[in-house]
Image 1 (cartoon, rainbow, N blue to C red):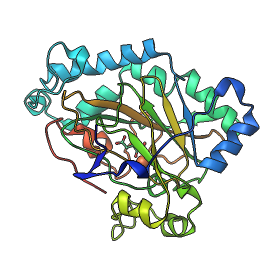
Image 2 (image 1 turned 90 degrees about the vertical axis):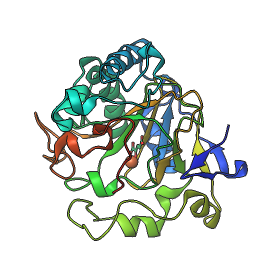
Image 3 (image 1 turned 30 degrees about the horizontal axis):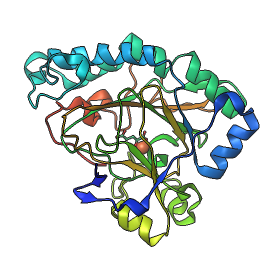
Image 4 (image 1 turned 60 degrees about the vertical axis):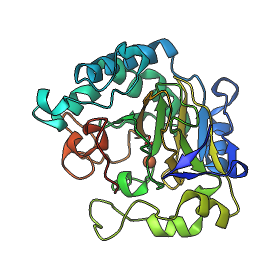
Length: 300
Ligand SMILES: O=C(O)CCC(=O)C(=O)O
Ligand SMILES: [Fe+2]
């Protein structure tokens, strides 16, 4: 199985394995130390897979109703078709409703993650209300970037949590992290104070191909074969992206990314509250996921 990004095969020797952190065997200080040292925490099986499958099936059912997933929908196989726009007049409202699925919210904004982040921060943690659920098919991938330009307007003390709902082998477009990138001074300087919504002349995406980026910096592209219930937590300056989902079986990749911050840090109103407006003010309509599965994406 090949690792592809933007049609280019990633040489095997550039790939490395994400290091697993064991929650039960780590005290809070060692969690913070690992995050500081590695730029990420890879937690396997942190969410009960039964809960994950329940949420996944709820979401798959909705995608099947707009004919984007084949029957039986529990297999998560893209049909290549869509009647989303015929049935739902407003893409943003549709995706906001999908993102409000209770079984999903019980995971993204529930006790388990809240207590993990409370341990990491050493004070009460709060999950963002605006979440990024992603159903990905058809060779799509997320371009390399770091998250600072999206989420640090009010506080730098924000962490991303990437949650896995399907089996994600290398051909299904898993997330990757550039090893050691959270300590790159040039990346920090480039993106510190950058706000993707205000600084329109600058892009969040790092244009250099990840293969060239890793080769030039003599580092590795870290990833894993993710399972439902796994989570990857990382900081705002950790450079990451995803491989392409070019799976032959046409199974989609379902993941959800959600941010957490200490409760006592100032909250960015774009991401908190009843009807959060999201990064640009367009609400859930601004997400690539609001597009039918068979439609092309934008990059920011
Ligand atoms: O899942 C993706 O496609 C991108 C995820 C990401 O960039 C993030 O979680 O910050
Ligand atoms: Fe990201």
